[in-house]
Image (cartoon, rainbow, N blue to C red):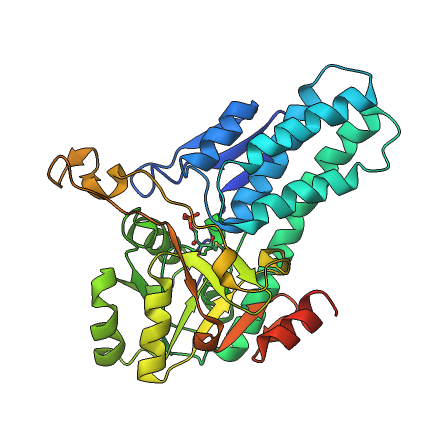
Amino acid sequence: MTNTTTIPTSLNFRDDCLEILNQQKLPHEIEYLKLSSLNEFYDAIVTLKVRGAPAIGITAAYGLAMTMNQHQTENLSEFILEFRQVKEYLYSSRPTAVNLGWALDSLEKAIEKAKSVNEAKTTLLHTAIQLHTEDEVICRQIGEYGLELLKDKSTIMTICNAGSIATSKYGTALAPFHLGSEKGKNFDVYACETRPVLQGSRLTTWELLQSGVNVTLIADSMAAHTIKEKKVEAVIVGADRIAANGDTANKIGTSMLAILCQFHTIPFYVAAPSSTFDLKLPSGTSIPIEERAPEELTEINGVRIAPQGTQVYNPAFDVTANELISGIITEKGVIYPSYEENIGRMISGG
Ligand code: MRU
């Protein structure tokens, strides 16, 4: 039998642009957008046309590299000054995912020793391409480690979309399911719809259906009932920023699932590359949490559903306390408690 399944990807580098799959239009429309100007890159990140921590890091890196390649000067100091301004602008697009700043810093480090503008321009583009290609290898490795933890034919819950389209390929939390499909292992995945932006119902279902994974959609409020009634055996989620003690910021609703896992004594796993760790932060209390526009809650598809004048609180992420996390699956292996010690050893080699 021929395998007709595919693992979708969302980022394609072309010589004159970065082509992205517009995630705002999914699943109804497959629209590719060509990004080449700084404002196009910035807008795509802010408006969630591209989203997911690794994918926004890669996109921002291309945005910085391509913008600087268009900059006309032979003067290296002037080039570096402009580079820092463009970098700051892209950095301000979204605050929570540390991968964004990490990718931009990687570009800055890469041109530290450049001797000419031409050399800096070439290095920037090569570094962005390298981050893009390395991310696929990293995600595949996360998937391999994840597969060792998750039993074949088990029932697993996830939230948001930490999938192939949120990375270069494979994803983080969804990588074991994609790899499982390739290797003939099967999972029953319950995808939380992920209010208010619906990354679960629009993106995770779309992505897993394409790679032949058995996925069932639930509303976020059905998680407790589903874990009990459908005998969910583990929850796996992605991450936007992990502090030195293991506290983890991820899509709003994640910490609620971790608390449920503790109550039901099932494992709660975080899957993330080492670029998602922010070892400068001792704990999750100082992770910046993005608050998004009230319309994400007061409207559905542009139609007002809440009364005019309703006050809205719309944090896009929450922080899961380290003691609720059973293990953090990275490309370097699975990190278990005690996190302070083991994160230092595995991520920074300290
Ligand atoms: O607001 P989003 O859609 O960018 O949020 C994405 C998440 O919370 C993901 O779980 C996280 O970035 C990991 S993606 C591999």
